[in-house]
Length: 238
Image (cartoon, rainbow, N blue to C red; front, side, top):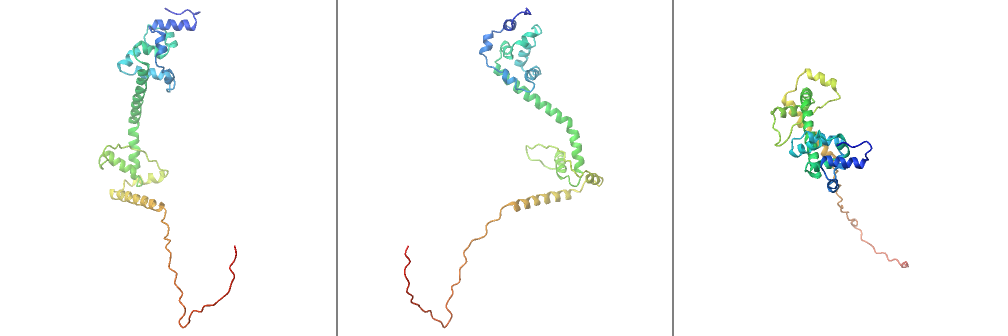
């Protein structure tokens, strides 16, 4: 059954529902997820790609309804994803949850692949910088990565590039080879001491003590006696 060219949009949509085998009222009463799918980067296409790449039974069932080769293309064009979800016997809310989870997992897997592809290059740059006398952090990361120094339980080692602006000085120091371990330990201790000194210098100083000093009492000179002078005066009126 194919719609006639003169058929209206409503009649064509009714034909699409009939060919899919779904009651339009069931779609009307079902939860709406089309507006959520539209907010995904890539929209409907990204959601369909995530579902097609999944081996979940519900995802495979939905794909079998949506990608049915016997359905004309106008059915997929005119009907929302909620209609195909109902045709597969899946709640649209459940379909939206699967889409969100599948995109999260698949993006994480793509990120892991990208990190693995660049890992060798990053380790090479970090190893070169570790030969620089100033590359303390790169040396520590390298030693932890190789298991020469203990790492905190549950921690993850990230080999980061430490690109310095003094590239010429670094190139000259590479020819001299890596400094001995004692020098590295000394630099670490000095760096920590400098940080502690900076922190203590930034602390506000305590206010000075405001104790009241005693005022010495002037005693009359020896041989002199105090004299009382009688003076008449008027009280000041307010």
